[in-house]
Image 1: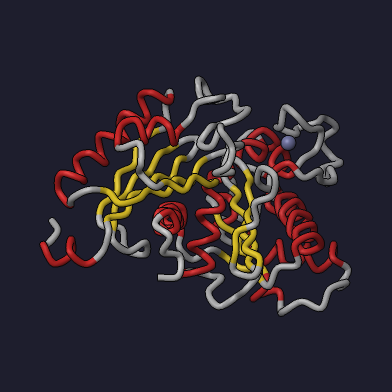
Image 2: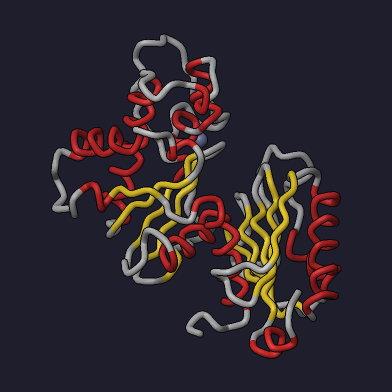
Length: 309
Ligand code: ZN
């Protein structure tokens, strides 16, 4: 429980890491140290938001009013605050979510004037990794998450890269390194051979008939996976020129995989770039599953206009 001292010090921040499979909600005064957190499966939008709102209402009763909220969402989503559709989820196969406006749903329950920054879950994760994790002290930080999908985000000169919508690195086209199988196991329904379609968790399971977490570390699946991840990192190096590439998400944590990715990167890049040692350049995320929610609390702080505070 809060002390009156805590409440008087800082405004209460709220955050949602709105993932495609799970929702994480948290409150805190300081992004790096969430006070309380709840996780539950992402279901239909009405049901999911009702559970999130109930959590925030309870926490507002305990800690006092919520001053601002940050939301790091699955995409694609409208994250341009000047768009009339700010807060909406776009094309998605997830039931009922296409066209649903998350920001409107939150504001109609918690206050129409509640300051909210709505961005992608991977943008939230890169913010926290760049500030508190593996990217501390670097100006240009790239982050790739490899799990049930693939996403990447970039901090250029200390600022998140957005663009017209937001980067969709999961759908960059990628060579088919899998010449042995004789069938197309690309799992993306939009593209013939894209990064996510080849290298995310569902693609590994489709290709080998076993989920990645059950495949042994010496299985050839990881040689193939390393080729795909290296190709993604080579492309990001070419287009973003980061100081560091951080790998997060469940698949990339597989023991032994990162050294294979570095070896493949060396082969594929042809030593074209003068890069830092690959052990430093291609590195593992440090904040684990907390990256998204800590980053979302940082977005809440941005919503308060306290990004430099
Ligand atoms: Zn695709």
